[in-house]
Length: 475
Image (tube, rainbow, N blue to C red; front, side):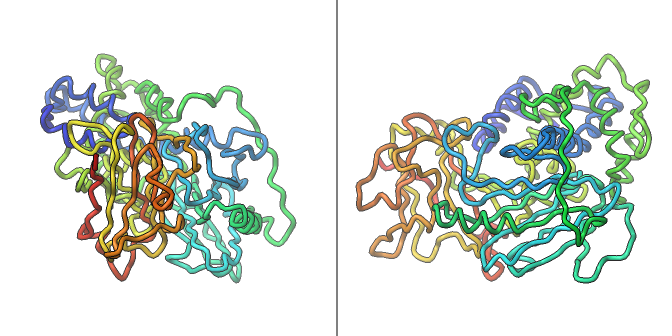
């Protein structure tokens, strides 16, 4: 694979700030794995293959390394209930949202299944995607798939084959590691916060052996050796080749590869990575082991540039409809892990992002912009849509009306012809247009359009026939 600087220009519209450095580094010269040996190429493919599983484990360690629930963290098997949207001071996670409150937990299914009891959501939009250790969304209870009435699920692992209790539906994971990454729609008002909090408190999560009994999650054990400050992706990328493959081999014992992975696994045996066994480092060539992690990560980021890179680009927006389930598309799975761990299936959500209005300039609060949806051309979704403003580091921006995203819940006004105009600028467009104002900073910014539950009756988002409007500079 050879990449030129000219080929890279289109990708720069998509990359988050954390990915740009990797692209720039990779573009210092062409990348041709065939020229540096077959074993290196196999090891690099194996690195990309295992990137999601290693990242999931490192994420689990950080999120669950507390004695009791604290903000975005909680011990294994304990529900994390985010109670309000973050403000402009929030720096824990890039690209936060102001549309859904998270209800999440990491589970270990190696000993027994877990029971998830979902209350009657009273018609409120929600989804509870369940990710296996390889980041595949293996099931999605929620409004789109199961409705909003009360539901009880048995989440079981690959080694369990017992009797499913009456009244429960089994959701089978192929790995012992599972991440439930639930989202509940909330308008953000005081009254709506209270309603969602009441729903969150009715969720129950407990081991099957305790079902029907009062259950209090045990306190977690804090491991002082776990780095709780360095971002997870940086921790993964800092692992040496031997450390990385040693951890990957250990994780594969309880999180087995799929049957479709067999051809790839046969190749990986040549460099000492065998499913179900410890990694044998004697196959690792010291001459190239040092460069392997960084070069492999650059390959992941360079997937943006590939013609079959699984991304759609239109009017300055870039997005993918290939997330959540990946089959043997290992590099796409690794890329989504690197820039959007926990991504939904496209049937549930798509996240078009616009980092620049053109190839030669950035978005800047020095200018005024408008995004116009023609009459009848609002995003065809059955859930909701929103347009979110971020600074150049993908965090919220303080503004006089405390608005971080714009959607129909801000009660926007419409033009006489039925169109809707969103005013994207630093200063208010005037009191008569403030309902349509998405405040921008004085400096650089980025935009993200969230499209939840693309309409089954109008599949134009999923088949790329609905065009996202251009964000036009109007001054």
